[in-house]
Image 1 (cartoon, rainbow, N blue to C red):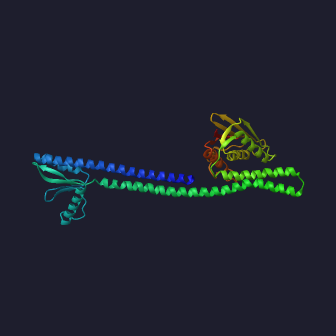
Image 2: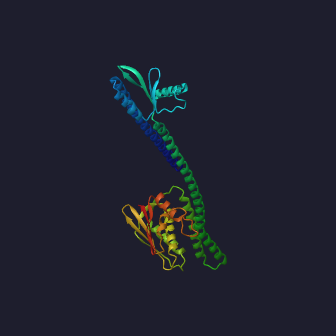
Image 3: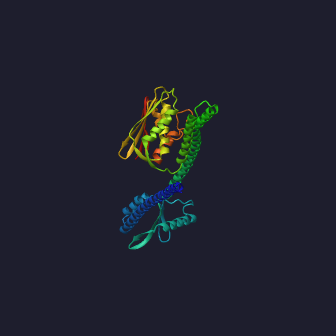
Length: 385
């Protein structure tokens, strides 16, 4: 149940965040429009006052200043009406011929539409209203009103394509991981099964000591059981218990040393403190084994040496795996933990990605490449005690 609730909570959180972002965009756009409208009204109020003052003073220079300078500076639609007719207008687009009845009717409709949004301002002469100034939104307001829709629409389109792309990538990775896990399972099972077949052949031939055959078969059967347990636990809730990290590391090293060809001359050694940690023993041994396998592949030449050291620090244990192999080139280091990445011709690139999942996601520790160069590569696992 928890496995399904977490993705739902993430999706719900993203949905709520998206709604908040959309509301924020719309709100900020509305505030901007209101500021522009307030500025337009202030300009009209100033124009109405200046016009009224000029008429009351009956000075031609003041009236010309209003008509020649103030009125042309207005950048929004404006209509000045006398009680019975339209006296003047500016920034009004009418398709009908000027002076025609259709032209007047269109101006009246525009005037009525303006009055729905803004109250007209009176022009006063001798304490009487002689005309009204009607005004509407600046042209930029109409453009800004559509801006949030374009912004939100653009973001939604981007998110949609991003989501579809992410789904395709995730599906591809999931298919690859399934195929890789199937191959890894076959690879893990292959060694003990081949060994068992060999023991059976020897048993049929009757050339070997029976107790030795039984001991060898028992070891391989135990290995098969361990492999089954690994794949079961990697996908289920781990059961932590106190385990000795040195004991686990030594057991893995002994097993890997027994599987290394004697002709390679690779030596695997362990040293350090016997530190107890809370961990899932089967999974931790798998993580260590994956790193040792990579070290063996890197030290295929004769005289290869792999050292596992364990150090105890306050609240944590540190395990380092050092080899004297060929090293990892700098251009490849950022990808070594990525699922599917492998420098081997027949590799599936799951070993290090599984190790990272076991150490970091399951045990809340860390695994990283400390340094690498020809002759020295060090991986470090840090685990909580």
